[in-house]
Length: 168
Image (tube, rainbow, N blue to C red; front, side, top):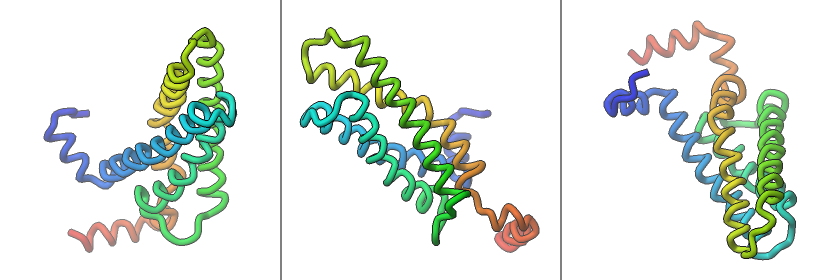
């Protein structure tokens, strides 16, 4: 893959590139929601411990992630398909929830000697953020290849060919 600035710019103009940019924007938005939720419930209000804060924050971030990814990044409209979209998305969200909760719990266990609650919150928030960073690429591939695909086009390749021909 050519990583020169010109090639990357050209790629961002492709359908795949536009999806990747929109997916990235949605990831930033949902990450802000979940990070703020984590810091508030753990660091500011102390409502939950590290595990509970991670679970809560993941649920908060998953809601805008689903709707923004489905509608904006992949351009899907209408009712969500339960088995083809909703269940797989939430299954991936549960994987993220388990992974982030483990990362936060592991980090909490190994940083229990930190005296400052603010510093401890910052460390745990970084572990929470890092855990989702590791899943980001895998989720894009799954969303793009399996989840938010155009099933109508997928099952009718002659229509896709007609659309390409008509657009030329």
